[in-house]
Structures are given as structure tokens and as C-alpha cells.
View 1 (cartoon, rainbow, N blue to C red):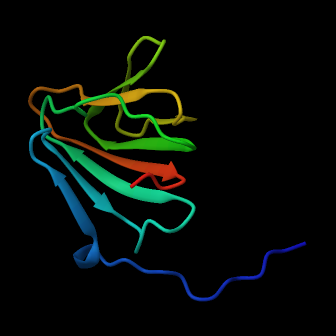
View 2 (tube, rainbow, N blue to C red; view 1 turned 135 degrees about the horizontal axis):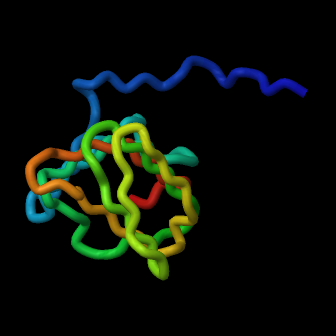
View 3 (cartoon, one colour; view 1 turned 90 degrees about the vertical axis):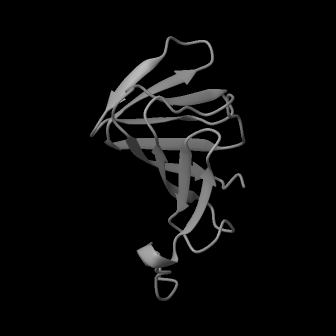
Length: 120
């Protein structure tokens, strides 16, 4: 049975994106949805060279990451770190502790990250 459309899409213009900077980590998060009240939270995350999350993240649900530019080291607890390059993606349980790091000391990293459900 087809799903009926629920109305008009929520649009978020670039100028309307909410930015959550983390200067101490060298990271900037840009929310790509109008709020964090939906079932997923899409973001663009930009890392300065050598920047990384300060600690392992862990939250309910699932996480998807896609590298747009640069190279990212993804570490999931209990596994060897993996390098993802532009065009690579990863999908995993967000309940497993995870850490992102820009694998370059000269180039910025830009990724799309989608958390479901939102964790802010």
C-alpha cells in the first residue's frame, strides 16, 4: 500500500542552517533539518586538519556517515580504525562507542552525518 505524502517538505536554506561550533575540537556542525524533533538528524560536519572528537560518542539508534571531502579515520570500539576517503560511507549502531578524526594534517575534512534518532 503506497504511503500518502504528508504535505510540503521542510526546506532549510543554506543561510538558515543552525551552526554548532566546537572551536576547542576544531569542528563545526551544521544542522540540515529545521529541528531535532524528527526521526533523524542530518548534519554536515567540518573538521580542521588533525581535528577529532574529544571523546568517543555513544547514543541510541544508528549513525550514517559519508565523506564529501578529505579523509576520515573512523574508530569503532573493539575494531581497528578505518580510513574513509571522499565518496566512502559507513553505517553502524550508534550504541557502539565511535570516534571520528580528520586523517590529514594539512587538508580539511567535510562529512555528512545522519543520526537516528537525533541525539542533541
